[in-house]
Length: 267
Image (cartoon, rainbow, N blue to C red):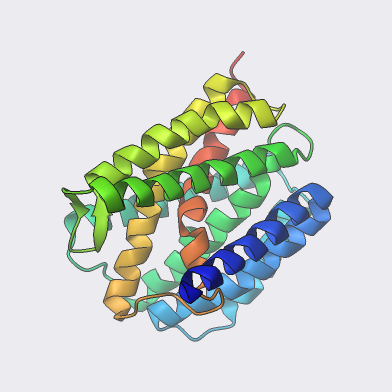
């Protein structure tokens, strides 16, 4: 019971901080996620056994160039393509290779694109409408919470078929389907609470989050299994590290951003 209380308090503080920053201002949102980025880079580098300050310098440069000053669209799209490519390679590694090969060069590529690239596109999601729209990023996080919560509830009570046992023994097919169904239902709730996107668009985003968020969670689990650790850190009591909380939305973010950008070019 005490452990549950600690988990609940930790989750509430995280949610209040997150939502408060989103709706306070664009600057508060970006500052919070820059700080999140510093923490998550530290946690990922420990998993990959990398000790370097280069990633922090890259994080600062990318935040200034893409998130704060919104440089040339062509540069953003090149960065997006590179990030999507690296994430696609990681999906391939997850599905067909027992152990993700992590030679030195690939470790830096993973940090720069899988993590920093995904983080940058997460911060760009609320600005795809041409202005800062906190409703959009709030809706994305709400759908992640719908998906994760119901996947856990359905999986714990009805899960019989393992989703990917050798990577994440507790995940089940029933839990994945439950999370997918309830995130799609959650899209209707998000539509009622926000004003920026139609129900159909929130349905699509819910599908992206449920599918790619689950894949992102599995990839992070594979990194932890290779590092022989249970959690990425201990910053959040009862939940592990900050990376453990953000892995799903981080991996899904470039795909969400791509969809929202395509909407600007489709009548």
